[in-house]
Length: 265
Length: 245
Image (tube, rainbow over all chains, first blue to last red; front, top):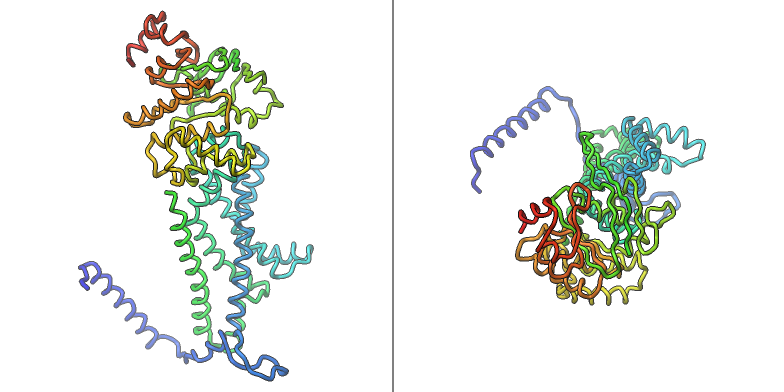
C-alpha cells in the first residue's frame, strides 16, 4: 500500500500522541494491577446460581443481565418516542394556534431541561402518584425526552416534502389525515431515517442515566460490579464496549434500511 | 355545471404587498364544455383553477358546482374534490409509490373500491394514456411526458365529472408536449368537461369550445378559438397573441 504525504504526517502525529500517553501512564500515572480475568464471568458463567441448583449450567453474568435490560428500556422508549414524536411533529404544524402552541411549549420545556432532572421528577413525583415501577418511570422519562427531539425531526421531515404532494393528495379527495398517512409521512420518514438513527443512538446512551433510580441497567450493573471488585477500568471499558455493540448495530441496521428505501429514488 | 360569480382573491406577498389575483371574476361552464384559459403570467389563471377545488380560499364570491355551493360552511370539500380531477404543472406524482399504486391509491382509500376493481380501472387508464408497460416502475424512472400521462390517469381514475389542467405541458421538454396533448385531446373529444390553463394554442384551436383571455385577475375577452385567432377585438388580447404566436 502506498501512503500519501499527508497520511504519513497523520500517522506521525498519532504515534507521538500514543507515545506521550504511554509515557505518562508508565512514569507519572497510577499503579494499577489489571484484572481482566474477572470480566468473562460478568458476561457469562458456567456454574450454579442458587444453593438448590444441583447441576451447573450456563448463566448470564451481571453485565449481560444489565445489557439486556438496557436493550429492553431502549426498545420500548424508541417505540414510544416515535409515536410521541410523530404526534408532536404534526401538532407543531397544525393550523390550530392552540395545538401548535401546546406542542411548541412542550418541546421547548423538555428540550431545555436536563434529562437527569426529568428522570428524578418522573420517578419521584409522577412515579409515586401513579405508582409507576422504576422501569416504567425510567422508560417514560426517556421516551418523553427523546420524543421531543423526534418531534422536531418529524416536523422538519414533513416540511421538507414539497407542498405539491399535499395538494395532489388533497385534490384527489383525500382528507388531511389520509394525505398525511399515505402520502406525506411515508416520504418524510424515508428522509429522516439518518437523523432519527442519530437520535436513537443518543437514546441508548442516555438510557445509562436511569441507573440513578436503581434501575439495574448496564450502567447500574457496572457500577455495582466496580463497588464489589474495585476493577473500575476493566469494567467500565467493558461497559463502554457493550454500549458500542448496541449503537453500532443500530447504525448498521440504519444503513441497511436506507439502502432498502432507496429503491424508489 | 360550474357557475362562478364575483370571485375576489388577494394574495399577500412576503413584503406585505397585496396582489390582486382575481377581481370580480364570473363565468359559467357547461357540461361537456372544453374551456381554455390563456393569459400572461400573474393574470390569475392558475388561481382561478385552484379556487375551484379550494386549494386556494377565495376572499369573496360564489362557486356552484353541479348545483352545490362549494364555499358553504357545510360543504364537504373532500367529496367535491372527488369530482374535480386536477393535473398539475409539475405532475406531483407520489414518488414512493409505483405507477400502478399512484393510480389506485385514491380509488382505494377515497372511493373505497375493492382492490380488483381499482386495479382494473387503473390498468385500463394506463393503457389509454399509453403507458401500460410501466405500471410497476417508480415515477423517478419515467420521462416528464410519461409522468404527466400517469398523473392524468391518476386523476381520471377517480372518474371525476370535471378535469382541470394547470399548465399541464409547461414543464415538459418540447418533444414530450405532443404525447400529453394527445391524451388531453382524446379526453376532450370524449365529452369530458375540461378547464385547461395552457399556452398551447394548437390545443385551444383544435378542441376548445371557448377561450378565455385573462389579465389582471379579470376576463378581458372570451369567445370561440376561431374568434380569438382570426379577429380578437381587444388591444391587450392582440398584443398577447402577437407575442406568443
